Image (cartoon, rainbow, N blue to C red):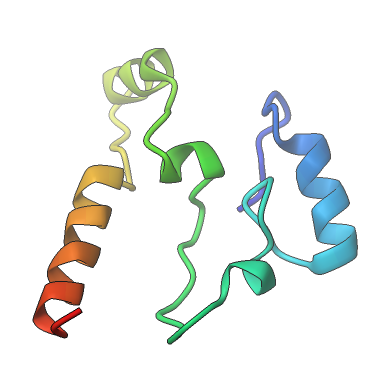
Length: 88
């Protein structure tokens, strides 16, 4: 993801990108790969992953007709379901 100009991850994203490549502002894609690699989420920040989003930002976005593209709770429920189906 590319952080917005006002993002608190803008500087850390730039540093990690220079050293390790694409990242979410804290963790590079390379560092996040372990086990069986299932893919990379696009345009999702580290705060989105831990479901710590700016509620006011989303409220304003929804007022202007935009929709949230990532739902952390649904994402982790899908992972739990996938693991259960694999018997893990």
